[in-house]
Structure formats: structure tokens, C-alpha cells
Amino acid sequence: METVEKKRNNLKEYYGKILQGSRDIKTGACCNTEPLPSHVRDIIGSIADEIIVKFYGCGSPIPPEIYGCTVLDLGCGTGRDVYIASKLVGPNGHVVGVDMTDEQIMVGEKYIRQQMQEFGYSRSNVEFKKGFIEDLQSIGIDDNSVDVVISNCVINLSPDKKAVFSEIFRVLKPGGELYFSDVFTGRRVPERFRDDPVLHGECLAGALYIEDFRRMLRETGCLDYRVVSSRAISLDNPGIEKKIGMVNFFSMTIRAFKLQGLEDICEDYGQAAIYLGSIAGHPHTFRLDDHHRFITGKPMLICGNTSAMLQETRFAKHFEITGDRQIHYGPFECAPATVKTESAGNYSGGACC
Image (cartoon, rainbow, N blue to C red):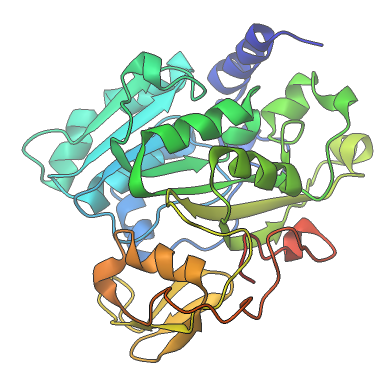
């Protein structure tokens, strides 16, 4: 087995020297084929070309309602998502990008002044830090200091994912959110592929089995997470398909909140939520996850966990919640977190489905 240091050096080599642009990616795992929201496309149009060309990711993990927030981007690469978030948090927000690869960080830092001028900011609201996402404390990310943690197809590359999730929930403020896109699997990746530098660099060898991910979150105290979107990944490479094609890979965008009192199944307290239509860019509907689509003004029955996600986070001012947790009516009519369907691609995730 390769050492952690060897794996990190391989990744630095792969993303810093071997890949010179998205055209060099060998599979569809690190490519985002989903249409981006229009406001995100508009921001990308104002970001320097070099940042875009040398950026790799499998999604667009930028949640709504982040104006004024402190956002942390894990494995930020050249900083595409850092700069998207920079525009969305506004001049009084703050965005920190963390990456371990010199060549990637240098690209992001090179354009700070240009991007601030493009956004009309008198001072920078972004900073890049070189470091490991498994040890955010060593680069000065304090406990309970971050509103939103984002990451785009990077956690799969980590040699110690438990440490990553532990650090995430350490730095998040109470009610803060982890919102990230990554590669997941419907089975554990065979150990023999772990040391393959190409399979690792292509986000395949280190992809997380969805149930192991659930267990890792549980160890941090997070008993419920939600899948926002999921799509099957096409490898699009006959050699790699022949080698590792027995594993089914999925690109998933997931959200989880740092909340006390979440339960491991959905419980019914007779609560309902009404969306006020006040989140910017979402005047008619708001999608919490792949099975909670709130229509403006329409009451929707919710479980206790969903109530907490709406009442005890930055979304609170955008919802009216009726009922409390004084009276319990039994399980909410949905499956527990331990239940999944035939594959990770159909797995609805978390406690409520």
C-alpha cells in the first residue's frame, strides 16, 4: 500500500503537471454535464479563462442564500467556485479556498485583483490557503467560524475522509451547512485499485460507497443528510472501463447541516412548512433536496428533521413553520436513513425520502 505522502504527491503531480486543462481528463467522472443555473453561468462568464480551463469538478455545489456568509471551499483548485461564491456572498462576505497543489493555488491567487475589479469590490473578499483538507486547524480555520462549506469532486481524493468530515463539522457554525458534489459508488471500490495514480486522480479509486459515507457522517453526530441531485457517471474510456467498470459510479450533490437533535429516521410531530418565496432566484419554488420541493405559499407536511433544517439555519426567515415537537405522532411516512433502493443513483439519502 502506498503511503499517504506518496498518494498526495501523485495527486499533486496529476493535477499540477499532468492535467493542463479539462481536455486532459480521461473519464467523465470529473466533468460537470448538468446545466448550471443561469445566475452561475453569468458569473462564470466574468471569470478569467485560465481559471475555468484548469478547473476540474463534477457539479456546481453553490447553495442559495449565501449573501454575507463566510464560505470555505475544500480543494478549491484554481478557484472557479471560490470566485462564484465571492460574487454571491457580496462585498461583506468572505470566501476561503484551500488546496494542496501549488500550481492550482497560484492560478487562483493570480487573478484576485482582476476579479475584485470585475465584481466592483473595493477590497478583496477571498483568500487562498495552501493546506490539507484533513487538517484545517493548522491553516487557521477556527472552530464554529464558517457558515457554508463547499467542495467540488475533491473529498473522494482524500486518504482520510473521516478526518475531513470531522474537520468540516468542527469549523461549521451551529446551523451551518455542508454542500458538496462528489463521486459515490453503489459498492466499495476493490482495494487493488487504491494505489493506481490514474484511477485515483480521475476520482474513481477513492470514491465513497454511499453507505460508508452515511456511517462517517453518523460518527460526526450528523444523523441526516439530503441528496440534492444524482446522475450516473459514464467512464467514456474503454481501458478504464475494462479495469474498474464493475463498480457503478454516481455524481451526487449532497447537503448536511450542523444541527443538534436530528433523528436517524423521520419522526412525525404534525408540522408543516410554507415557503415565502423570498430566497433570491427562487421566487416560485425552493428545492431542499430531491424529494422536498416547496411551492411558494403552499403548506407542505414535514418531518422533525426537515423542520430543523428550515427553522434552525439561514433559511429560517424564508419559511413559516406550524407546529412544534411537543406532541409526537410516530414515524413520518418515509423510509429511514438505512434504507436504500437498488443503487446509489436511486438512493434518496438521509432520513427522509
